[in-house]
Amino acid sequence: MSIGFACLVIGKLNTSLSHCRIKNATTSNLRMIACANLLALEAMIDYNIQQEISLFRISSDIIPFASHPEIKFAWQREFGECLKSIGSKIKRAGLRVSMHPGQYTVLNSPQEQVVEKAIADLRYHAAFLDALSAGQESKIILHVGGVYGDKTKASAAFIKNYKRLDPHIHRRLVIENDDNNYSVEDVLQISRATGIPVVFDNLHHLINPSLQDYSQYELIKLCGSTWKTDDGKPKIHYSQVKAGGSRGSHSDTIVVREFLDFYTGLPDKDIDIMLEVKDKNLSAIKSINAVHPDLPVRRLEEEWARYKYLVLSKSASMYNEIRNMLRNKHRVDTVHFYEMIDKARTLPENREAELNAVQHVWGYLDQDCSEAECKRFQKLLQQYTEGTTRVESLKRHLLKCAFNQNVQYLKNSYYFYI
Image (tube, rainbow, N blue to C red):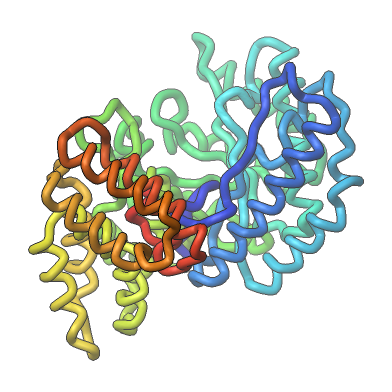
């Protein structure tokens, strides 16, 4: 079983994606943006490999406007070797990748123009995965679409338009239940008519339930039975409800004990779990560590190195408690470790704690800062103390100094990114 995350990496340098508006989508701009995004993608792949994360969803935005009918950009020819190289790295690492077109890729629309755009978008996604030489287990996840007043008719339209797709799309396409229109029961009916594998989404099922005589674990098994051997392990989407958020919104982070309850209940763990959560890789690493049967303490020490100043900026007592936990070099309660961090993350701003963390970080930098950097720090420190500027201004300055001095330890700290 693999646990993964989607599209973006928090707290890792050189992984941000670039975008442009269609009015600026000249060939030279598209070439420049695509090149930068492919470098960012490779950095994300490297990160996943280093962190031993073997499931990752690639953003659809790597090649901007790739399926736009009026923009002709030969990205496959221009970046073929780069994509092949990234794909080789993915294959060597055993990393399973996927893609997920957005809400405007609607295959069952009653408007032919929308369907044609959806088909073009699916061609792009399949072509991108093909350019990586990704195997059939690398999937394109799609929602069925709208109901348009008649779900039976709309489902039939999806099936009809699915048959128009190229075979290289067929071998990658999977469908998932959504939180409004198509329940697990609905997508299973479409699967029986087409042979398309089904991804079970736990939060969507909670909001839009069906087959209520089945437990969620039975439904996971039922959806998993739609996957053929060549499709790889069945995949599910797992997320938690955001406290106080809108209907269906994903939580900011995975509550580790709640995830463990779900994971422990799985009768068959021969599945892959894609987390859909705001803090992306942070929750993926947390969840992977939480289910590890005998996690080395060094893994939590590595995590602590990234979290420690964030925790210190919230509560010195929590900082000391976690630090004391890690003194046991044989075993640490992983769940309690992350619960303490998550609790600290939710605390409101405390000026005294923030100033304490700022001074600790500055202690790594002050000896090698220029006179101008020191003066800038002292000015921002005074302004924050007086309440005339925000702590983010101080943190931006500290991060800039860390970059200037190439202090990797600080550059990797979540203190600057969360």
